Length: 150
Image (tube, rainbow, N blue to C red; front, side, top):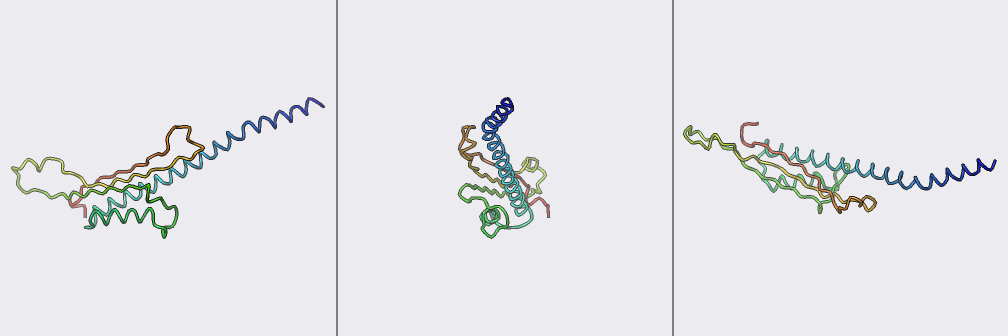
């Protein structure tokens, strides 16, 4: 009988030692899922910005504000990102074909328009073992605007 009482005590000690590791593991899974959701939102916003460049005549400032509104507005349904940790860069370089056949700049690759979004994702205190304060999530897409994509 005494042997079985010791086994119950041993199981309790093992559970007490393992439970913090299980909690950290589960917390890491939830945090990583949240990180991936933020990354997916940023990639979608980057695609949206590139579509605005390719299919509209909106200027750079309007597209930047529209992307920030898409990600950070309180009227947005779903997850809202922090505007202070968001950086949106829009560069519009319109492609204008040159009809002069002798001009060799026609054969050079023109500068592309792009949208680049960076979000600084704060690492929780529980996971600071990697030695960083933040993780940056980046997304950049390019498009050759004005090349007849309409």
